[in-house]
Image 1 (tube, rainbow, N blue to C red):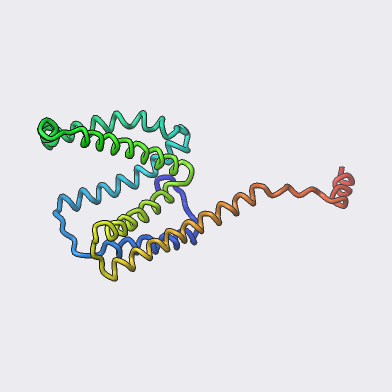
Image 2 (image 1 turned 90 degrees about the vertical axis):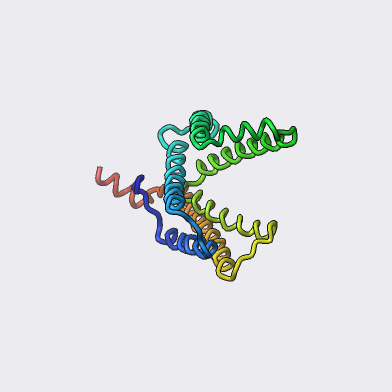
Length: 211
């Protein structure tokens, strides 16, 4: 709605199993507070807006590179995190923990985690630039259900038949969406390289006669 952009009917149909599948995959006994629910909804809205705006910054009028975008956004994110940590008391708790429990191994782990987060942002922004905001959103939903699968394998998480059905449905929907996108891009590429038809001899004679 923001960009006044529409997609093909087949694309919309391919999104349906993704949305329904995530619902089934996460179905269960939910526990939440009113504040937690509102923050979750707000976070979901902001995540969707972020994906769209990021795509516009990367491929729109600005055409920034992923590293350029990180260079401009990281300082702002750092300031926001520090302010929020100070307001919630987390900054003080981190200082106390660091003074008493910080080790070389833990510091190394934090540095590796930061490097992985940096790499994740680079890959995410690059993929967003080369695909689309919608593709990134579908990939994000598939990532959520794959996280559940990994939790089952690594942490022996128990899931029911409904959750398993949702995981399979989401993966099928994601594959279907990818197939639809590839087909539509291939069709556009074929149309772009079609040679311009040249007039035959009869048409040339007609043009000359008209002149």
